[in-house]
Length: 473
Ligand code: LRH
Image (cartoon, rainbow, N blue to C red; front, side):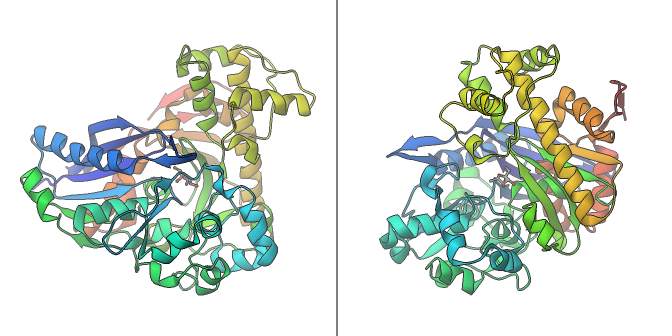
């Protein structure tokens, strides 16, 4: 019998509820609900509206039923690092502060003065990003130590939604790794790191693996939907779900492309070498204890911001078309923290061009070309670093996620790297989310079989260097 599994995939700019199923050894994911999301400014902080997000999740379940589908299970994934703190009654003690909020300014620098980067890296294998949970908690400890005293539990955003669905509190492994507070070897919250920021270890829950059966819905939700469904924890870090859906995981570099560009390879062991630290690569946890050895590149966030500032007079396609006409665009280092949340992205890009003595992009096409070309330059630099660290060269880059629809960037990357670029699956995150649920339900044997199913179910596009042609596969 065909069963349906709901993947709730929440992103920084929008969320979707997708119903996944397998028929004749082919996997399909069907969108049942879509909504927008954004950071909101509240009492001087940038926050996520988690109540609104939860009500969208519920609407997704209703929409699924309205399509005549009664799902068997559900799992939620979101971006990494963000969390809520709850009191003994399960009420939020702070808003869900967004990782781009300025509260972490200077905190990473401060912490790493007391505890050497080498030591933190040797425990966690996690990259140094100013917004990592460890620095968010340290910032909170400084400004609101009372909240940390009162708090009874720490839940990351997907953990919180799973709690709202079931009443049960757990911390999921892949997302826990992104905090830079989990020990990569013991797979437990690291007591030394927690002590270094003065946070009690009792706040944290048991770390559970993707595929964990959490149980049925709270009674009031069963009443509301008219049916129960099982919550199965997926790889709750969206990038971990996306990487689980990379069809040929061994021979390829992957680029999970969305608000962020996450470029890396999948490994069976973490690489915590001096070079990996110097190049700031991360070893985030994946499905089946794989390691996502990757780098965060600023991603399409930059072009999303540029588009927003033009007051939506230009569509993405306008920006791409205008960009194509620009010769010799300015190239900037997109990975500078100045681009994380500048007051005005266009002005920040222009300032970076002035500082590097380049022609200042004035028209929308110039700005867009600068972003697209600078991103592919950064991809190229990271590919060189990976090949240097792992001592291997790769013939192919597999772009997954929504950004894989940008044919212009796909071709630019092929030209830039001289490698074959494979685009797809576009729905990698939702697919990765549902395959973990399907494995847990015994519908798929294991990750290897899941990847074979993805390879034969999802249309991929191939881009060869220089020729500018696209083959459909
Ligand atoms: C992508 C992502 C990325 C994290 C960032 C916070 O959505 O999860 O992997 O580094 O958001």
